[in-house]
Image (tube, rainbow, N blue to C red; front, side):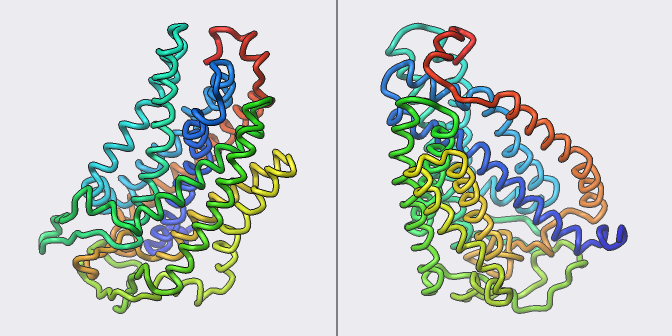
Length: 384
C-alpha cells in the first residue's frame, strides 16, 4: 500500500487532488469573508451596522486566508511550471488581486482608529474593493484557463507568454468572473445571516436570495455553453505515461469542443457534481426565504465546492492549456516536481493538515454565537 502511494503517477494524482482541496478550502472559507466585504455598502448603512458585519469576519479572516497561501505554496512546490506560467502570464491580474487583498488588513486595522465618519467610510470602501475585486478576477482567471492561455515553450523549456491584461478580459472570462462574483456574494450573505443579527442579517437575506438565484442561473448557463461546444476544450491524443519525466513537449494535444465533457461521459457518476453546483445555490435561495440559517450556509458552501470541483473534474488531466500551441499545455502527468519532492511534501502534509483543520475547528467553536449591535457596543474598541 505504501509503495502504491509513493508511485510517481499516484503522487501526481494525489497532489492534483490536494491542490483542488486547498483551492476549494480557500473559496469556501475566505470566500465568505470576501462576500461580506462585497456586501458591506449594501447590507450596512450606519456605522454600528457596518461594525456588526465586519465583526462577523474580523476574528477569522486571517486564518481563512491561510488556505490561499497554502494553495500558492502547493503550486510552487508541486507544479513549478504551472506556478511560473500562471503567476507571470497573469501577472497584472495577480497584482490587482494582491493589491485588493492588501486593502483588507489595512481596512480592518485602521477604520476604527479615528471616530470620523469620512475616515471610516473610506476604509469601508477599501474593504468592499478587497472583497469584490478578487472574487471577480479569480473567476476571470478560471475562464481564461478553460479557454486556453497564449503560451509556448522553447526547445530548452523556457516559457514564452504572448498575452496581455486586455486579452484576459474576453467575454468567456468575464462571464466566469460574474459566476465567481455571484457565488462569493451568495456565500457572504449566507455567512451574515448565520452569524449576524438584526437589520444586517435581514438585508443580507434579501441580497443572498438574489445572488443564489443568479449563481445557479449563470452556472447552468455556462454548462449550456460547454454542452453546445462554444467554450472549447483540450484533449490528449498521444499515450500518457504517468510515471514519465516532467517534460510538457512530449505529447500531442488537440482542441476538441467536447473535451471538457469527456470525463463526465466516461464516468456518469461525476455528473452529480455539476448538478449539485446548480441545485445547492437553489437550496440556499430557499433557505434564505425559510430563515434556515445553518442549512442555508451549508447549501451555499456545497455550491461553492461543487462549482469549483466541476472545473477541476472537467479539465483533468489538463492543468493549464496552451491556446497558441496545444501540445505545450501543462498536464498533471508532465508538469510536476520530482517524485522525491512530491513524496516528502505528502508526508509533511499528512502531519500538518490535521493540525490545521483541528485548530480551525477549535477557533470557530470558540467564536460561536451571533454578533449583535449590543455586543459590538459593549466591546468598544476591542471590536473592529
